[in-house]
Image 1 (cartoon, rainbow over the protein chains, first blue to last red):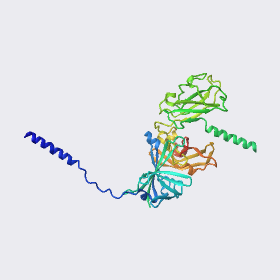
Image 2: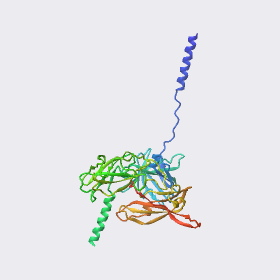
Image 3: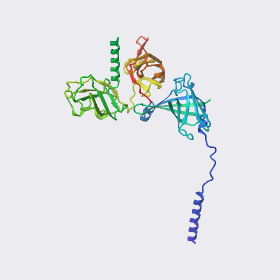
Image 4: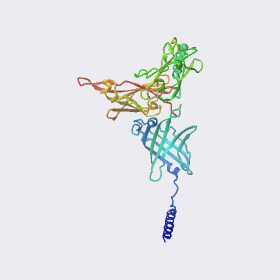
Length: 168
Length: 257
């Protein structure tokens, strides 16, 4: 009798464990996000931050500075256009702001259409690269761009600038 | 007129050569990095020498300096100070700052050197100062943010009264900063810029500018360095306000990509 009860207990326990491992029904992930479409539009700069990357790496006390109000950065406007869902032309209107992007117009491209990380701006033979710091999708409405400044002789990253834009 | 032009050309050429001599590999190094310096001694007392020895010292003009452990004595340089031939009139020497000077990264700020014959019968002028990339943050009265900046960067110069050296620097209330910019030949670019300041902490005042926005170098030249100082007021014993300035310091602009 004892053996029957013991065997029954183990069969019941195994059954419970097996049932617990049954996968739940997959939920719908919703429509895939189109990052490129979210990047397109006219963007006005709202915040500029300067980071001393070398100081940050060494743990020095002065690493970051909000430079938004030091110069009229908030006048800077960036427009990114799409053509047939692909990056096409861009333009910048610095106004009295420092030229965070020197090129005034040209074409833009991304390194990966589905999940872009780098945006390359081209005008003739001149190119500038900025890195995306965040996609303006879903609840996030801010376009974040980052520009790096490296020592020309060593390639060492010394300074980075982070820019936040609001859609107009 | 031709002679004058030739003279000016020679001066400019001389300054250009001097600007690239000595060279360092890597170009940025801290006190714990191995660095190789290469020096062209053409036109000095060491031109044509068969052997060359380095005489090296830390923190020139700053205090707290030490001689290189390889120096030996002036009349009989150590064999460890012997430099390696790197071409006609060119010599190189490889070292690690902390090992060479027996000082910590916090103590080592800069170094200088000269090249000499083993017996000291001939030598070059002093070459100095060359700064180590700091490994340890040392608070100072004058500080630039970021520590390395290019001509197109936002440059913020800071004055911290806590670290003032002279009585005036310890008492002054800053009202402005003066920035003077130089090109790669050492010529001043435009007029000094007076920048308004802001109080960023109880004893810290800051001023920001963008070199390439405020200064335009001559055709064919580039902005190479700047000097800055803070101006302010102190009260004299009678209670009257008088104008004073801090000491001035120099910042070399980094070529960025």
